[in-house]
Length: 110
Image (tube, rainbow, N blue to C red):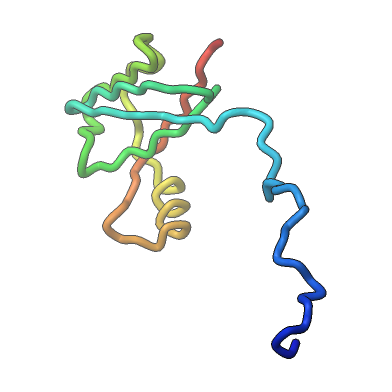
């Protein structure tokens, strides 16, 4: 250590520029969803596609599901229960309260 009265050989001054840990080349994407029954309305920014995970507790798979993104219809139809989807997301989340019976991959045209 230094004794009292000694000059500090390392001044408390940072001459380095702050560098972000990861370069960000574009703005992050965002998807906001609202649901009424089997109708989903998505408002998106900065995304070309997204995946909706559908729970049989929230959606009636016997009725058509309608998805609107940014005011345009992007899906309308029935969705089949899919055991592979259920197992994949159950293994990933390890949360029995969040079981998804189907997934919808939505692609947005630019």
